[in-house]
Image (cartoon, rainbow, N blue to C red; front, side, top):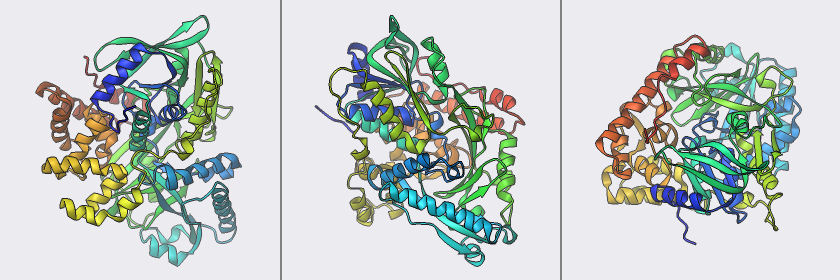
Length: 569
């Protein structure tokens, strides 16, 4: 069998041809982190697998998280020890084995406001957090430490002196959630899964009561076709209830959407050697180091409007600024905010009316023959969720199916990463690049960085930085189109890179250059190239405008003035 590390136009055509004509063992609907995990789990058991996503990989919740791989320290207070231990085990796996190039340790400070009781209480929680991480194997991060007030002030000079009496530091991990998801889909494709983005499922095929496939619509070409499968897995996150209605089932559980908003602020706006974990009246607030930026989030409010484009409001932004400013010597203003993004958490609805109290555990249902539903959970535990979903699916298949093996299968680019990292200076000299640039590439592509360097060797100008987005180079745009399944300009600027939230103009100046590069890679004509730029600029304008609105309804209405781009229109 010929394997390809590419997820490009040729691989898309091959996947289309296969899905049109052959029955699969497993078809996964939904291309977020859980759907991608399901495809990876099923294909590495030796099953024939397809995965369909209506938009781009990770275009929903999986590109708009806090970008943390964490146990969820606040769940200790809710006494949900099994969830924390499971998540910490997965954190260690991701850091040490599955994706060391993408998942990195990150240090946080918990500021203490009371001298004795709070230090004892929080310290006990941190100790338990460390113990649970060791029970799951090698944690991959240092243990927590207690700091005096003077030590905190030295490490975090921008913290208001009257905001604390000391602190406790601990470690978790972080990841570029969208890039990881795309890499996971690509790895599943490498092992034989047939992956198609921009293909919408518009209904289920049933024989009697049994689901035997789906009616699919390729939004790139306009073609409609059927995909047959012995088992279909519904991994559509906040769209779970909508997808279940297509099959005439309300489903065995209900998913509620909770909106979380994050601000992106330049790193120089305040001085700190680590991130912050702050308590709010409802939940917790993270200030997370993110390259040359800080991520500040998140909110936690019910959302009942458009699920594809949740909108941040002026009130959301003010809420986050107010809470972070409560501990800073020099307050942040709206002018300091470089980017804003909003995402929806798929929470399993329970008796509580507060979304912050709803369950982050996951459930698997098999209420309709031939259809498995996976819902709930959190980004960190995607691999366990996928395993449970595919376990349920294979129970209904004939023959002896192997157990899940994803615990031991690294993502593409992970094998040999440490050796490549140790050679980064040598690589930089060989290509005439700055070492920091090579480090950036290695921390995004691992050992697949060689493929980007080959592009630069053939076309040296691809080493140039994108306008207004100095952290990214032109080769990354070409690579996204040829190897990472990016079909539209927004896919590259919003998800394969994070230009849309990390640049002051949100990618407006980078858009024409990136579109020209994609046109060369994907064979667009000038009309298509201009249309892609126009759609992207309209998206940016709509997002900016929505973030000035006072409430969800107004923000949603303004955001929807920029429709999704569809090639077949």
